Image (tube, rainbow, N blue to C red; front, side):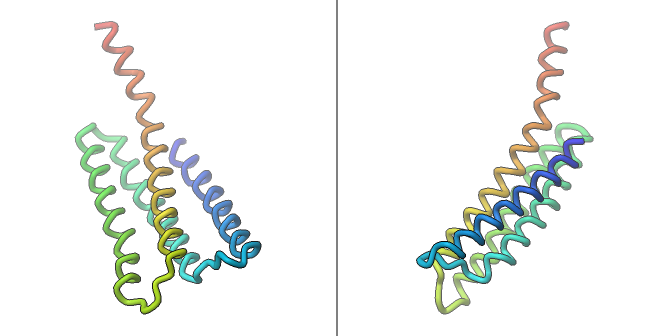
Length: 136
């Protein structure tokens, strides 16, 4: 149930985020969105869905598996999210500060979104453990 909610809410949030970025580009002449922002948005959205699936699958098993998958997903996300940014910084002759800031905002947005949903899935577990501890 939680994973279906995650995919629905992240899709709607991504569409709203894309609309906001488009409006910023359309309404504000001083802020021009790089054409690379749109592939970056789709890339980070797709990676968030994959990483969430990996992390969420660890919830069905024991705590050690979940922790291992969670830390692995953090490392995978960090490497695969910041690698395109580093490639951009090293190989693009003109460095667009608006693109860099927007990319980092998208990275933190999707990371926080995923962590929020994973922590929300852990709350029922912590309530069950505290209730279980009272009866022992």
